[in-house]
Length: 90
Image (cartoon, rainbow, N blue to C red; front, side, top):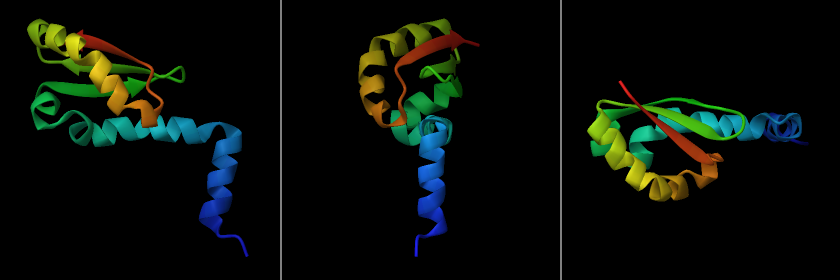
């Protein structure tokens, strides 16, 4: 007998929701992904269907610093299907 969780997982994958669920975990797991220091000065807002992550940062200087770290952060976010990060200063 097939478990409900397995059936649901297959349904979500076929319906295109599995990737969106992976992307949504970025918001919840942000401190684990970027570390406490970066998490303290930034907040992920949304991930679009095309894999663009929008992140708010406390200041323009921090935004510039994080823009330099974008390639490294994208590597950490590959499992979440994030392809691009847009940084925004508060």
